[in-house]
Image 1 (cartoon, rainbow, N blue to C red):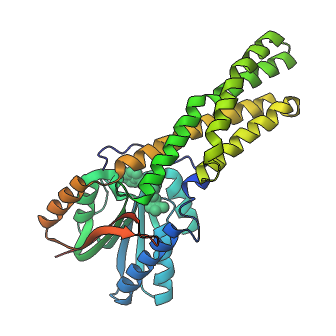
Image 2: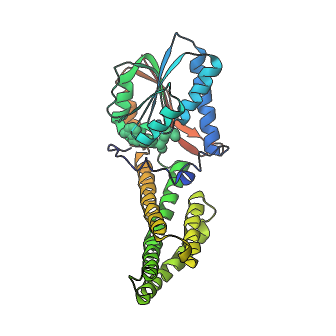
Image 3: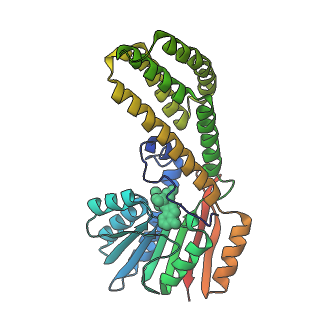
Length: 322
Ligand SMILES: C[S@@+](CC[C@H](N)C(=O)[O-])C[C@H]1O[C@@H](n2cnc3c(N)ncnc32)[C@H](O)[C@@H]1O
C-alpha cells in the first residue's frame, strides 16, 4: 500500500487500450466487478431513506458511479452523487457526462468534506493509492450507520501479476531503445532532405538502430498475444512502415509522434508501478483491521474477491459505522 500518491501519470490516457484491456466489456474482471457492484447497490438502494449521499473515492472516469446511477434510476432511489479523484482529466470527463454529479479534484488523504457527510462510500482500485490515511479519511466522512465498500488491489492477485508482466514487457521494450534510436534515424533522414545533415550521419543512425530492431523483434514475438504486446507491436510496425516511406510524412509530425510515444510509455510504466505499490499486503490488511476495530467500525467482509476462474482479482472490504 502506498503512502505517497503523486499525479502518477493518470492524466495520460492514450494507452487506455492496454490498461483497460482487463476492464473491457465481457472480460472476467469486468463481469465480476459489475456483479459485485450490482448486488451491493441493489441491496443498498432498495432501502429507501429520503435521500442518500454517495461518494466514489478515486473514481477515475466513473465506472462505479455509472453503475450506481443506473441502479438508483431503476429503483427510483434519491441519491446525491459525489466523485473525487486526483486527476483533473477524469473529473472533467465526469462533469461533462453527468452534470448533476458533484465531481471534484481531490486527494483522498485530505478530503474537503464534512465529518459524517456520506451514507455510502465506495472505491474501486483507488483508495489504496492513498494508503491508510485514505481509509481514515473515508471513515471520518462516513455517517453513523453509513456503509463503506472498497475493492482494492491485492498483492499476488491476478491483476497484480498481469500488471507485473505488463511492466516487464514495457521496461524491456524501453531498454531496447528502439524508440529513441528510430527517432534519431528519422531526424537524420529529414536532415538530409532539409540539407542540414549528411548521408553519413543517417547511415550511422541506421547502423545503431539495426540491433535495437532485432532485439525488439525477439522481445515482441512471444508477447504479441497480450494486450500490452499488441500495442507495442503496433508501435513497432508503425515505425517500420514510416521508415520505408519517410518522405511521405512531415518531419514535425513524425518527430512529435516519437516524443508522444516516449512520454506515454513512461506514463504507462509509472502507472503500473503505482498500481504494484498500491496493492495491499497482509501487513496492510492487519493495519486496516486494527484501525477499523479501534474506530467503532464493524467489518462485514474483508477478504479476497474471487474472479470467475477462481483466482482473486482484489481484496474486498465492506464495513459499517456503529
Ligand atoms: C486504477 S484507477 C481506478 C479508477 C476507477 N475507480 C476505476 O475503477 O476505473 C486509480 C485512480 O486513483 C486515482 N488516485 C490515485 N491516488 C489518489 C489520491 N491520493 N487521491 C485521489 N485519487 C487518487 C487516480 O487518479 C486514478 O483515477
